[in-house]
Amino acid sequence: MSQEPIATDIAVIKVGGSIFKDAASYRRAAEFVAHRLAAASREKLVVVVSARNGITDFLLQEAQAIVSEPNPAALDLLWSTGELHSVALLALHLQALGIAASPLNVHQTGLRLSERGASAANADFDPAAIHATLRNHRAVVVPGFLASDRSSVIVSLGRGGSDLTAVLLAAGLSASRCELIKDVPGYFSDDPHLNAHARHLSSLSFSQALSMAHAGCDLVQTQALEAAARYDLPLVVRSLVEPAPQTWITNEASESAAEGAQAAI
Image (cartoon, rainbow, N blue to C red; front, top):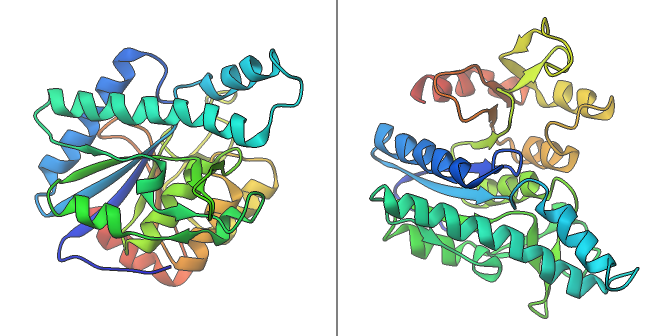
């Protein structure tokens, strides 16, 4: 990954589809981003968004109603409309709050695969467009789940791909951390939707989080966890609610650094 550091701290925040459930949820996400910008005057944010909850499956069903096995390129192009819809709506809600956030499309995001079907974890990242935009804006909104190939054809990164998008962008931008916004405030000892007595876990090592993923906990995509561990990138898993519990995931040797970063936010 090529890197072009700028003289301002960058954080990457990914807002998942489980958050975008209705029109009002985009406003709540925009308020969260606005609060973060106000709380850290020198920090700039790259906000990675997913399609609204259920849209990806809906678009797949729409395609399959036409042809049982949709052309992969056409399906990925159709899927991209869901992410781009979220990019535009969140940017507009930020504008309504007085924040000139710049919305970028799939090609401007800078993620590229060598070919369709190649491992998304090995995607190339060109940060030029994001860096150029951050020089004039404190927030950039980009689509998750998607990249382009060498022919500039849009390709999807697979289920949970927005988590991986956020990690790859954060690593390539030398971000201080990558925050993954979910519908729960981090990791628990058991599924909090099923067990009201599940214990919140404030910190995990990557090896622990990966063990949980292999045991069936799909809160964060496994590829995203592996990539974050490889780049020694601190992850924060949290909800939109502030203040609320959150889970930090780091390499064991990075725990003290993560504690200092956690205090800063």
